[in-house]
Each structure stands twice: as C-alpha cells, then as structure tokens.
Image 1 (cartoon, helix red, strand yellow):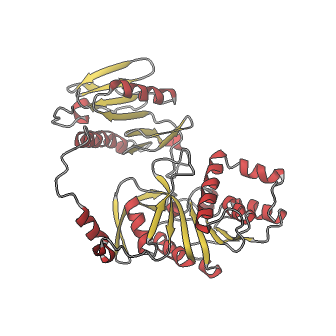
Image 2 (cartoon, rainbow, N blue to C red):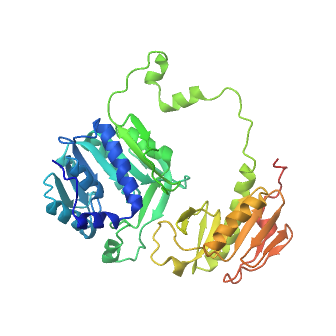
Image 3 (cartoon, rainbow, N blue to C red):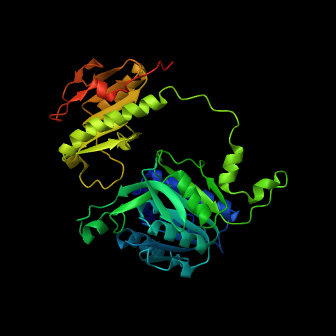
Amino acid sequence: MRPTNLPERAYALFEAKGPENAARVRRIVGLIAAVHATSKDWRGLRVLDLGCGEGLFALEAALHGAHVTAIDGRDERMAAGRALAAELQLNNVEFIRADVRSYAFENHGPFDVVLFLGLMYHLDAPALFEITRRTANSTTRALIVDTHFARFAAEVVEHDGEVYHGWTYREHRPDDASDVRRARLLASLSNDSSLWLTPQSLLALLRHVGFPTILQCHVPLQPFQGEDRFTLVALKGDVPEVLTFPWINHASEEDVTRRSRPTTPVLFMPPTGNAREDALLGAAITLGGWVRAHPEFVLGAAASSTWLDAAPRAPDVAIWRRRDLDSYVGRLRRVPPVLAVEIAADDEGGLREKANGYLDAGVPTVWLVLLEARSVLVVSRSEATRFGADDTLPEPPGLVGLVARVGGLLPRALPRLR
C-alpha cells in the first residue's frame, strides 16, 4: 500500500526543485499511466529512469507501486533520493551510480517504460545514437523522451548508414578539469559538447531504432518549457496494415512524402520571409565581426534563447559580456545582453512594446530593424531615435568601436511587403 502522506523532509526536497518540476512530474505520471492503461495500481510495472538526478520521477513511480531502476552518473543529487527511499522503506526502487554510456543498464531489464528525461541533449555523438539504441532494446513497450532539440540544422552527422542533422552545444570548456565538470550538476558528465538533433532527425532516429509510433505530448501542460524542447512517447508494437490505401503499407517515408506532395505550386510566402533572413544574416555578420575582434563579448543569433524576469525571450541577434555569463556552458542565458536586435517589417508599435520589455529586464540598448521603412530605431531608456539607410548607428554604450551602417543591416532590395 503506497503512503498517502509523506514526511515533511520529502516535501521539502521536492519543493526545492521548484513548481515547474511539479508540472513535469504530473506530465510523466500521466504518460506512464496511459502506457500502463491504469492510474490505480502500478505493481508489476518495470521502469528504468536514466539520468535520474534526485530521483523525482523514480520515487513517484515507486510510490505508485512500480519496480524502478534509477541510474545517474553523479551521486551529489541522487544521494538525497536514495536516502528518502530508505526512509520511506521503498524496497521497489534501486538507485545506481553509473555512467549510462558504459554501464549495461539493459541487463536490469526488460522494462515496460524507459524514462529518458533531460539527458539526451547532454550526449555527444556517437554516444547519443548508441544509448538511444540501447534504451530501445531495453523496453518492451515505451520510451518517454523529454529533450531540447536544434531549431535548425548547422551540421550533418552520419551513423549506422543514416544521416542526421542538428547542431553542437557546448557543455564544458576543453581545459576544464574533471572535478569542475562533475561539479556542474546540470551539464554533461564529461564530454565537452553535446549533439542536439533537429526534430525531424530525432524522430527519424527513434523510428530507426525500433519505434513505429511516436507521439508528442501537449497535455498535461508544461508551462515555460521553451520553444526548443518537447516530450515524446515512442511506442513499440505492430502497426496494422492500411486496407483502404494498400500502397502505403510498404512505401518508404520518402515515397509517402513524394506521393503526398501537392500537385499545384505553393504561391504564398510569409511577408518578410527572405527579407528577414537577409537582414538577420547582415546583423549577425556586422556584429559578429566586431565580437571576433573583442573576445570579451559573446554573440548570439537566430533567436538566441534567453530567460529574463521569469520569462523566455529570444532576440534575433544579441551581444553579451562574457564575464556576465559566468559559468555559462550552453544553457539558457539568464542575464540581459548589452545589445538586443529585433527584425520585422514595420510594426513599430508591437516592436516598441517588445523593446520596452528588454529595457525593463536590464538591456541598455535595443536596435529595431524595420525592413519596409528601411530604417533602424535605436531605443534606450531615455530616448528612441530613427536612422535611415545611409546613416551610421551610434556606438552602443560599453561596446567601444562597434560601428554599424544601417544599410549593412538591410537587404539590398526589398519589394513592398504588403
């Protein structure tokens, strides 16, 4: 019989993780219950939790009656979960300190459900591919993945005859000592960088290792999850043959895509599609050249993910002081940049509101690149000044020598956008 009330020390441990983790646990509990087809009694259900941290998900599943194996490469966080399991006399959960890259966790299986939560985006190649394959081999039913993904393809990686797209994410600096790496509890165990796959490549990988059905979870809600993270449920099992369209049963995904392609051309292009890309590239080149000559600063581009004033923000291009980022190793930047750049058609009212949000969060200067008006509005807390295509923008405070001509931030030719 599972306990209905936990000791205060247990609740204190969970509350210290923050309310956002309550939403995460609710989501995962709902998904496990859906896979297990019951929310009442999980006795007999075998669960593997990889990269378990303190063991929030492992303890929750064990409290519901599941038999849980929880593995993490660091004991600094897992020790609290192990101690709490002992205090609650949960004999159905086992905590193991081990590196999942080398530890044969599959020998503890088979499992009904494998939890792959917050770990995939800390792995580099080929570990990412190998561990995903091993998790697939370890489960008879479901793999639940919660991970960040690459928003665009910056590089191509080949593995096992398949081609995948994604980008490299820095975890540690090459000269960081091993004890420094281990002390970063929210970074990889040892690898300098990790490989984030695009959503398309991640789905292809899961399909390749043996999951014919993959679902994305939207409910239960996960507030503030960010635009570059999702939760997937990869399911094993035979897919029934389609009787009404027999050709699709043995067609490759490429054939399905080809045959499903519209026969008439798509004539619509979002208003600022190519023009905005050109302007973003111009801003990145202009600011990137200056940052390359000033290594004490860091450039972020392509909707740089930032968390300011308890809210996610994503300037198109931005510059930070490197020292402000402190031990930043590739996670969300939680300090305001010294310059933020936003690019749009000519929605000055909406952009001004966005600029004010940056200013309120501590950003001293915001450049609003207005494509249709072929101008840049420089906004600070004291004033807002418009500069035309032939003008040179004033040097932003603290960015000595940064000279930018408005024309260099704009496409060379721009048709009417409306």
